[in-house]
Figure 1 (cartoon, rainbow, N blue to C red):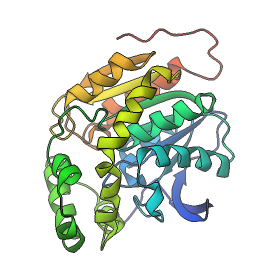
Figure 2: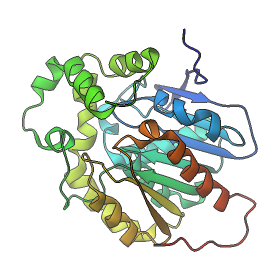
Figure 3: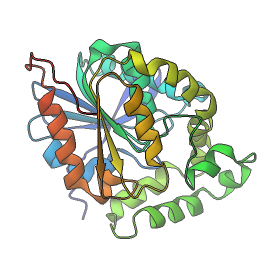
Length: 284
């Protein structure tokens, strides 16, 4: 029986049906961007802790999870702009934002565009530089010249990915099925457009990093073979206010080590509460 605390619903944003889930209303708000190839259910292991004192909203970006897609939105820049539209649609003025994996670049683009919308940022597990190498299978997904095979074998790709990433962390049946359904048919190949834009998009992001005023915590899984640690160090060296935290975990730390992940997120939120009037210098 599915007893998940996450109960997805939808909202229309810029003409698209966007899936999201939210917790009880609180005075402080947080927006969680689903990682790839997952969905809002990626935050199920941390939901109870994150939502204890904060109104938490998890969202599937366009083309990811169960949200509708549109070709022009499969880049980090476009996704970052769409994040701001989501905030407007949900009538959220200022939030903490948590953007693991693909949310790393989208969060930073959003904060560079409208820094006043964010109390803090938590990212990690996402590519940051077009000059740095990526691990597998992401490197192939970015550079493979022909994606037609992925269009025909989406479920096989998803099953293999989930089995390799979560060998010691069984997913609930409802979670696994949601991930598989989210990227069924052509949806997985279509979502690949996002990471395939990295060679161009990450060069733009690099120029913007010194302008990101929002405090950023970068969570690094030490045993991440998909996105090497060098990407996180690249961000930490260029963001004006950042902290880099290395955790002994695999790539999808938010599910493989949810206690550590929730602790770091909550600590960052506490340091950068809306009512916290003194500046905090993040350790480098």
